[in-house]
Image (tube, rainbow over all chains, first blue to last red; front, side, top):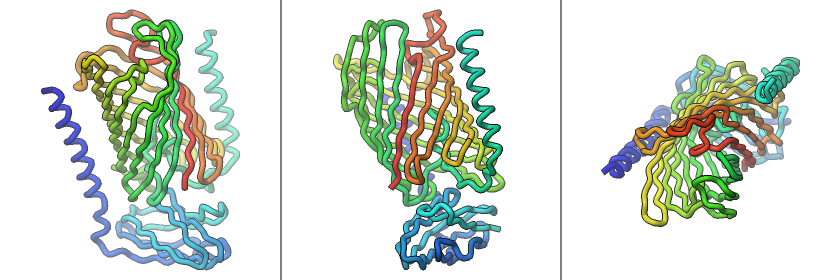
Length: 117
Length: 293
């Protein structure tokens, strides 16, 4: 009896978790704003880009260097390796206003900022 | 001065000195840090980065019972990945060692075993932003074991750990506070067919100071309660553990962390001793190594 109650409780928790996960990306329903970031000479160009708040974003990262780079951001919670002379696309959820740092994980001195307002 | 007070004084002095030297550096230019592994036994709210994969080895050692000699470890061999900006999934195998001699209520044992398997699902409920320093993640971790964690006996054990992991960035890129609330019901069947249900309910608070861009020191306190029922009736005892923690990033893709907790207070229902060494241990140590790829 108590075992079935516990199983039911666990099942409810899992169901709640699945529901939360399914509710997570309402962002996909809105149209994403595309932002282009270029990487050349191991520097982001421009080093600061702006974006509107509460709007899904599509970051298009163009690596003009011959070596690969890894676009990464702890606060945006994304990472992507972009091959030399290649291009990568990263979808980002709608963001609250603020400043979000990004960098090339293969090169500690390459950093940029996404200013969301 | 007692040994415990001396250790506490030395710890506070060390944190103060490291904090003082840390002020000499400008942390505003440091990269932001993932908080998940900064707090020792306390888990931060971080869920990694979308697309990130990580292999980790995590060993927890438990040492000391009321009498005799008690040494046990459990090691997680773990793969974790982050499929979206809100969800992290982990799974892996468990291995254990037990070295037990002359401990009341436990059989003598010296063994190494493949113990079981686990999976963890983490969901970021509240994310940190410029105007909100608090971040909260909930997690569910079903675990199956064929070896009892405490005694090393062959059993069938199912555990369903549910956690709330919260952390606050108190000073940007520098000082963090972490909090865990954990409910851990489990059911165990031993070889004669007897089934036992139990649960732990625990709360932690931790502080982590980033002394260098790749080095964090901290301290944490845990309060744990044990019940001989999954629905939190039949309370059998509680305890308080405290101790330091360390986090060191070897490079952008690898880190190690360590933590030690010592029991400083405890009580067992029906046993007036100063500690609770029936359900908990005198000391626990955690070592973790992770590599991202």
